Length: 262
Image 1 (spheres, rainbow, N blue to C red):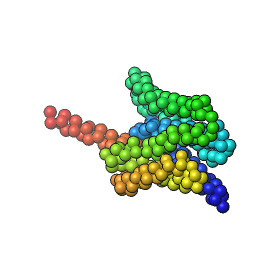
Image 2 (cartoon, one colour):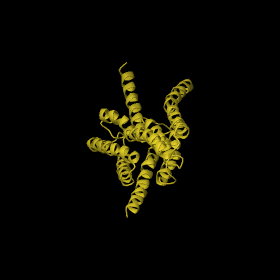
Image 3 (cartoon, helix red, strand yellow):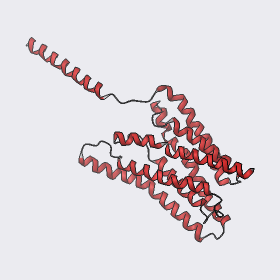
């Protein structure tokens, strides 16, 4: 009964995590449509990539005992593919609508450096963790202890990474860059994985989600507080053209009057 319950919760955790990992698709569809990353940050996706890499390694038989953490491998393996896709799209559209060629090259160089400074430590941390866990530890218990400890920190950072936009939400009084569905799926996934970790007696799965749940609740509280302020919308292209036409007519009338008075 206990194993079946654990399996059921793990499967539901996989579904919730899938919703969480695919939630940014709506964000990046907007990025692709507008051909600009606007005010979005790449940090949450880079940290999520590190989390998926570490927990995929944690679940593999090299670290865990046989395939006891297959559910962890399956969802985090998919998460790796999704997060890499999001980061690539972010890099592709990071220039936005820069018109000046010189500015484009300068901005490209600056943005690439910024993203490289974030992505490089992720690769270094994962590779270092993998190498040390294989060559310095020779049993599953110590390997799980080592990789799980680092994964725990990365997982807490992943759940807290959307908080980088909290300052922007408070200053603009707009939840445009902190979507409801992202915070909700984060709460759902963290709650289910916390239950799975407790049922399977795996603290490295339970503890980070004990932190993730309150952080997700905080994000939802902020959303509820500022959602009435609405989402900032861009002016309609037709309205801009109409206003421009009115301005031209007004300017023409003024010029005619001025010429008539001369």
